[in-house]
Image 1: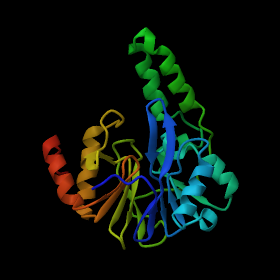
Image 2: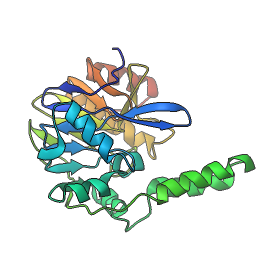
Image 3: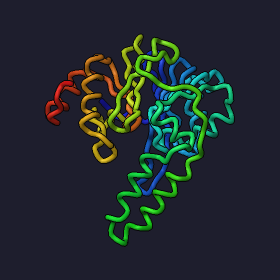
Image 4: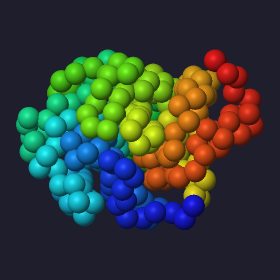
Amino acid sequence: MNEIRKSARFGASAALALRYRDEDGERIVWPALIGGETLVDCGYPGQLEALERAAAEAGSPLAGLKAVVCTHHDYDHVGALAALKRSYPAVRVYASEDDAIRIEGRAKSRRLEQAEALEPTLPPDMKDWSRGVKARLAGVEAAAVDARLVDGLPLGPAGARAFATPGHMPGHFSVYVEDDGLLIAGDALVVTDGRLALANPRFTLDMPRALESTWRIAALRPKAALCYHGGLWLGDVADALGSLLREAGGAVS
């Protein structure tokens, strides 16, 4: 499929094109808004206004927002959460137990732990880069989490429910919008050059477990997948994932 670079709709859900720039140029991440009520992930620190614009452009302004689902605690997924909670104080925030303690600042980010463990192995010319990464990770503002995600938990309109997909992070969750057959994948899957792909091994803490989660996703037989990195993928998700998993040698759990 062609790459989508603007907000788009699939059934009850809107895929929100949230743009940001880094040293490599413009990138897009893709929060999802289900039925105008349930937001899945919310972007980098400082992106609340951009998120509000993207939601309005998709015809689903955040005025009706009731819940925010955090697929996991990586800073590109929850960086704007504290600001969002201040602007929409009635909104309930959902995260897994492992992620909630990190979002609330009661435990160190697993990504920060990873960066700290990696730094001693880096050459001297990468030390400044590493310090910058650690500062960004440590600087994410803490936010309160109101409820814990468990597998199958209802999450709003169109039959949306929590779907446990550990691997990328131990507490990673996706959201399955059952009425539309849409899998909102978080980082459990990605889209690269228009193709559906497995979780990025570079950033996945437990790849064997991520492969097990991918088999679970394939068993749902979704009609589409919305990936935080890459956007909306339309096609035979189960068939595409089956091929990728066989290539990767992932065993059926």
